[in-house]
Image 1 (cartoon, rainbow, N blue to C red):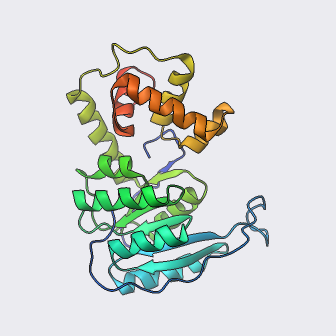
Image 2 (cartoon, one colour; image 1 turned 120 degrees about the vertical axis):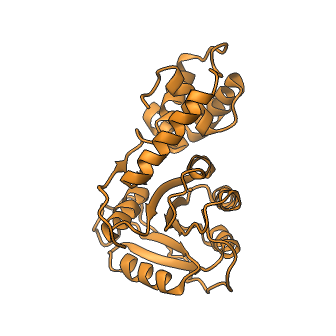
Image 3 (cartoon, rainbow, N blue to C red; image 1 turned 90 degrees about the horizontal axis):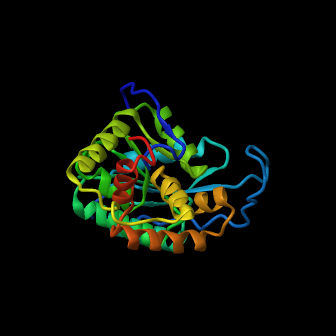
Length: 263
């Protein structure tokens, strides 16, 4: 983990994926940590344990990640996986707080694998830790559920910052990745006609559209507006239907075109 890229923490206002291909046999997981005390302050003896799944085809990388993670109080590796299929199985069974996934290489199959993991355990924060920047796949990975991306050339502190950010349900992309994401979205905006020009959203729908486009999760939107996550999901479905779109990436395009958020 060499290199010295500046740190960028995305707290929701920036844009908010990759899993390893099948390579070797699965690795036995530790049992889940019981009795998480969700209301305890950080550093307290009863503070929540952040359970982390590591998925990487290389044992030496997994070992190094485990050592890095477990030197932090309150962080614990609950499982390791060497293949995409095993990562999906372990995530589905253990439902970790964070899954650190290697993306080798960044292909549409990797995006599909990320999507399956997110579908199986939507509350798990997905962090890509890869040697690839994957410019072409980044928008798809973000849409599939990835909330963070760190390259293996970044310093160790970047990965630690990313884990801390995702543990707080914030997004984290290193500087080079953030610029790649931004450029990809701006290119897509330039190619796409205004999908929402003939559709009128209610005031509440516009609020939700803006918050979602800023990168906030359903849970965060619900907290901001004082409504339930289920209500947010209902509004989100109505927004997608009215705008004729099918993904968060398209929603971001719409919000930028209509000056609801800044690119």
